[in-house]
Every structure is written in structure tokens, then in C-alpha cells.
Length: 101
Ligand SMILES: [Mg+2]
Image (cartoon, rainbow, N blue to C red; front, top):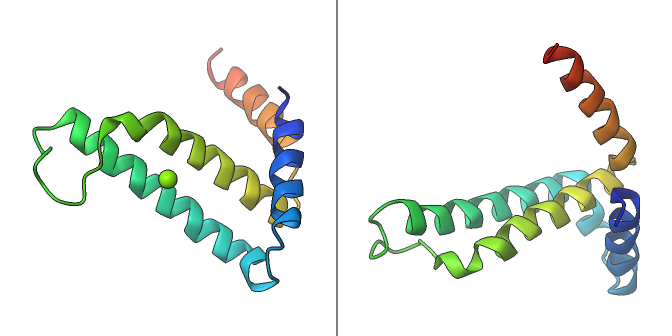
């Protein structure tokens, strides 16, 4: 699947479930992204350190879903900022290619 298609899916889904104007503010999307990054961190802490018994860690079974959540929230943020993420990604890729030569 192309990134632009994934971004379209997220945008259509949000419209379908009727996100309010406040929820479509970029800062709200950004905070949601950070929340998902935190959930991924909790899952990694559980997996990578002997912290399974510490509260606020989550079981590593959720790791795949948490990383997908980060992608979803990134697509959402890009949409609310009117960023074409596929185009931005390719631009960044070319920039990184130049750095490696
Ligand atoms: Mg999550």
C-alpha cells in the first residue's frame, strides 16, 4: 500500500466517525501521537528490561499494535497539517541518500 493511500484511509475514517473541530486541531493530533509513543515505550520497557512487574508497563504482545498506532497518529497529524506524507517521505529519503554518499 502506498503511504498516500494509508493517509486517505485515516482521513476518511476520521471523517466517518465524526471528529469534532477541536479534535482535528494539529496539537490534539500531536498529543495523541506522543501518547502512542509512550504506550510503545511502556511495551518496550516490559520487553527489554526486567521491569515486567513495574506498573505502567504493558505486555510486549501489544508492541506491533503500538507501532501501528504511531503510524496511524503520524498520518493523522500530517493530514491536519495538510502535509502529503508520501511526498515528504520521498523528499526526506533523497536527503538521507545524499548524506550517506
Ligand atoms: Mg496504543
